Length: 572
Ligand code: ARG
Image (cartoon, rainbow, N blue to C red):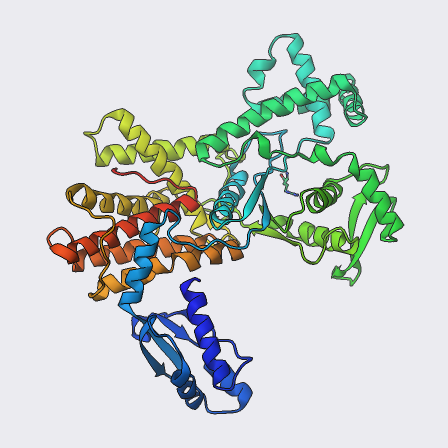
């Protein structure tokens, strides 16, 4: 059990024994050291329910609360809080267990099948800054959920279907005649622009493009082959970015919109048979009473356009059917820009109405905000275009290289480049993950690359500092006993013991910024411990124990950053 689960269960039992079996223990890490290490806050609400005096109830709870071997001191504070001071010996045993286990002693959950759908780019164009957040957040969620034992399926729901692709394929055919295709396709955005220009200016070309769309949708082998070529090529652009950014996505995770094509007429027909479909201005729509507009009219979720075409929404319904029936997912996390929030609400609601999405399946939109420029508007290039992701990543590494060079000019260049890749990409990822995903944030190179504050370079540097202690301590005993006596040792040990709860909480809420805040706290507490409690200058058991706390700090930082997809270095 995690520490929080353990304490909560004991307080819960005590509340029940004191006559409040329905009360919630409401145990939380204490917000100030004076309040102990944990605080049980549930007594007040329980007393209110029972119409009794909260301090008296707290007394009763305390009389039966069994935290032997876990807490060394309990006290009642304020109107009825219970302050819990953990027993140093208990913390020492937890630390030893975490040290002895590769996964830091973290309990495995009841394994569920969890899909994380992320990145999901439109293959017609090149990846830009708008794809950064979803990629980084999705990848962290993959790592966190896998770490605690879930069976995780990564999914890249790429946009690979629709009229644009007829145009692109037509243009690809046209320029390959002049032998220029390879060159032009190096830059997808230019390729897209040129083909759009041809489409707008030349009616014969536009006709061919439309003809290709029809052929594509009817499964014409020739056109399908060309389309596949284009899709494959566009995916190599994506893969190069995933690699630079250290995302786990690869070709096996791709299941594009096209995959659901055959199911679209089937599912629309099924909606009709279920009596959910209404014709509205020629289109087929599902009316959803729960989403009313300003005039009080129910929102229409369009599943088939006038003229018979299908839409983004139809494909998403097909994907839900596949994910529930074929993949048998327990949980599906759609990591997508928050601006699509209404789409997902309507999608889930329609799928539930059609009984395609059972109540037991936990399908969620994991929305995220936008990356803003200094002017508070979505970040663009000077000429007002989307910032290409590949250029942004290269700039991050280049800036980190300048920084590393100014700090360590004596290191060989190859080494500085290696460090720069880890620091630059780490900084970019951490800057994103450390902010609440729900809000927008202003992009700031200097802040993310700073060695001070809640940043990746700060944490990566903290890790190397611990490593340097080990380089100097030649006689480290990895099985040494942990003994906690000093306040700084205890505070660090409490934080280290909270890693398990933190990881579970992030898996639950899909909010990685809590893990960032946690790691920053660990690094800060380590600095304090390092100053207050000499490691290498101490002797015997004390020295061995402090080295153990340092070892667990390093392990926790490495593992925690690893869950965020951020690497560490032994020296930098
Ligand atoms: N390709 C879409 C876009 O670029 C995102 C897809 C999100 N996922 C989904 N299942 N709808 O906006």
